[in-house]
Image 1: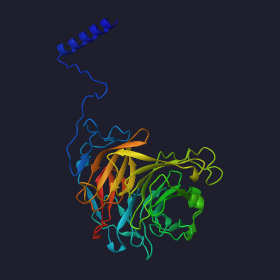
Image 2 (image 1 turned 135 degrees about the vertical axis):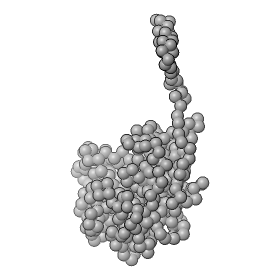
Image 3 (image 1 turned 90 degrees about the horizontal axis):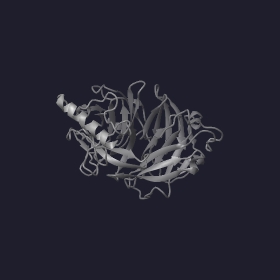
Image 4 (image 1 turned 30 degrees about the horizontal axis):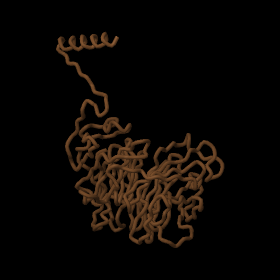
Length: 398
């Protein structure tokens, strides 16, 4: 039987060649393939090689970087640069995009002001939307279902605004009567409306449920002690005054409303809720960690390091998951003194990763974080090194 099959294959190959065609034979064995093509470094675009020197780019299914409607020359498109008005509000830090309205928002660390700009309008300086005040500060931002969420940095607060009017809806005080240093740095919001926020000065992640957010008031409301997720001892903590520990955070494997509703007690999460999975970065060590918050409450969390070939990412700041890749922003790194955006291919169900791409731009000034905005990535330039205005936001091709 095998001899007959070989004869048939040989005859088909001869027939193809006789007809002016070609016969192609693919090697699907280990390390085999039909080859790959890629462009060289363009506009600060660098690809990381794998063990065999082959370049890979992952997309929404972790195999196709092009994604729906993505052109091969997208990365070569020049970056857009937005300029923030009124630099006296201090260094910008966080950014969020409202896909419904097309507005993006940028936080100011100096007094908690929040800017609002229109995607695509680079001619008009981005104005202040929500005025700040002395003693206030704002860092990480997120937009979800008509609400704008803001981390309050050294104020130890989490604030929630109406995204259209800018009205303050709720303020949460995470300090818990503790006078030790705090810095609520970044946050993310699940599809069902739960909020997770990091603290760079305490070994903690704060978890506010959607029900708590809905019951919030503009006047500061202390969070429940059960809202605090301890990250010790798994995640290293440096108590030195100048050290920044946990920083960027992103919700992974977000199951949304259908499988994410709360039942029973606020923190015991009975019923069909399966818990949340988070990825956080430790700026001090450059390590990434996966935090699983179980369905039985915050105290049932599991933490393990997400080991990345090509890491660690010292000074790692904002995080984003897009097209199957984890994106890490660094204000500076070896070979990238003005900052870099790292693209990590997640492998083994997200337990491991590999640095596959790095992008920079001449407009970068120590970037802090990133947001997805249609066909662009919005990257904030706080310029903490010199604090020289004007402050800007870079829009890279996505």
